Length: 217
Image (spheres, one colour):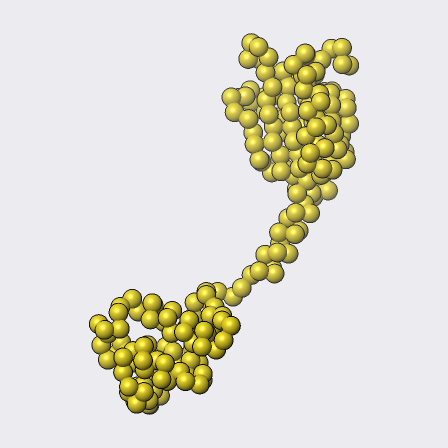
């Protein structure tokens, strides 16, 4: 068979094994000679992916491509499914001679079925309920000490208001205290004094804010 192969296709024979060896046993690489669609496969590596061998015919997709006759653009990264349900990520590269006539296809079929299973497992593992009430935002406050945590929570809450403390009204400060209370800040020892200092009010003012919030809640 090799004596009748076009020289350009013959030069591409080493690429079949080279590509397949690079990407492993799930990567089938097929070189087709389009001059004989009924027995177009002149080289194949990892043929177990689709069960084909040298001398086999062109695939349904290949025949349809030949019939359509549009070889201006390679077909890259399309999906196919084997009869037993495995998913293939495929590419077909058109090979032409010096006169720009089509002489062959170089086809790569990568069985990604196992990767899809892993992808679905990873999705299930990292999936979170975005409709839950807690946390209020997607960033968590961590620290090496409780004071670090307190400082982080207070800083993020102030940032969410977007206004310097000096320009805040009483209502805005009450709102900040309410948000901090909802986050459990005042369960931390010393939080009253810390928040009072940050908001430039007295600790008794913070107590009054909390009484006001809890009465209205």
